[in-house]
Image 1 (tube, rainbow, N blue to C red):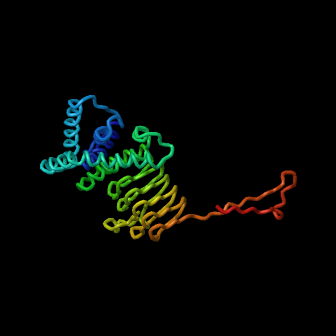
Image 2 (cartoon, helix red, strand yellow; image 1 turned 90 degrees about the horizontal axis):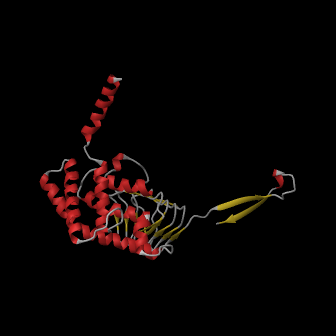
Image 3 (cartoon, rainbow, N blue to C red; image 1 turned 45 degrees about the vertical axis):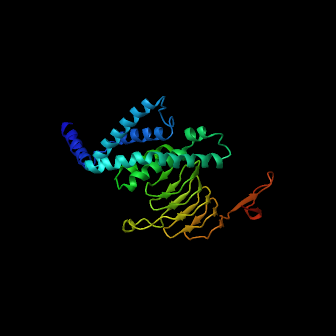
Length: 284
């Protein structure tokens, strides 16, 4: 047993030497970030300015500690922390626009508080906007951890490298996948199960644009799949549910999937004769 434990210990050390990032520390930092953006969104509300100052001070120290774990020198850490302080309000304003877009676009949403506290789409978007800041700073692992925490909680997978415009609307959200090089314009609505993916998975394409571009004011309904870095969906287009797309469409396009449901009708009191079935076809 002792020899087996030694082997497990030595095997574990190999992975620990690769990274000393503490996942729980990143999640704690992420939750605090959300509460600074929308007090009470996750855990904390602030009673006064002094309490907010105290939380903010600890929050920035947590960020310094996390950044030091990814082997960033002290000067760069200080620069990133300073940039983060400058970006808290712009990130907050961007997420507020996303929340208002959800409120305006979903008939079931009654008020902004409901959207902030209850909508998984907003949680995933907030995680993305925070992670995207760190992605642009060329920080490894931390941005992916932030979006993966949201992925686990919501079922929405947004890569932090994607570029997403303001007033982004995700309704329901489960199963959405947005790839690293996807570009999404302003006032875009996406529903559950949508994939903005790559045509092929090839490591040699890592530095190329592999995912589609969605222009402003588009709506993409549930389970549509849009693939390819050269695929562009023009402004004000509507992509229907279950559509599979690998080609671009111009502005103001409507793309939909036409399916057939075939039903066999048999009178209940007649013995089934497969050669005499009457076929009914419904176009959807």
